[in-house]
Amino acid sequence: MFRLPDLILLFCVVLVCLYWLNAQRVKELVLAAAKKHCESMGVQLLDDSVVLRRLWLRRDSLGNMRLWRSFHFEFSSTGDERYKGSVDVLGKRIQDLRLDPHRVP
Image 1: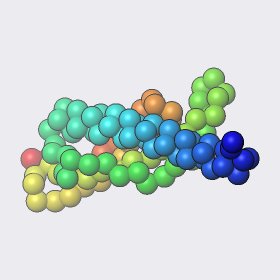
Image 2: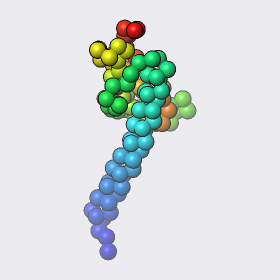
Image 3: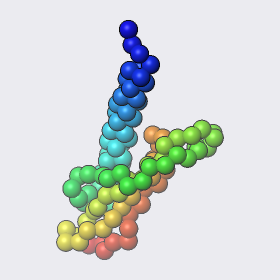
Image 4: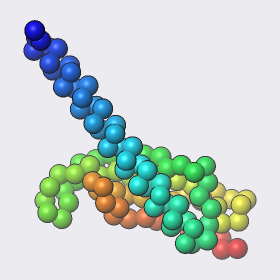
């Protein structure tokens, strides 16, 4: 039937697929939060995207290991200049959302 190397390969493929699906859900969550925050601050989210910059394992408040991700994005307050923002996520919870200092129109 199946040999051990085949089962290990299948297991690895399934793990990669599950990670990718989870990563897509987290990225959608971060993009929605960045859009909402930019709207509330009166600035424009540029390129309608967020980019994963860092990935690490960290413990949550209960001591469980979770994936910590840091996403970056760009925004503009005047339409002429680009500023940077970032969102930190632990598991599926947003920990921090920051905008760099920017010119207020």
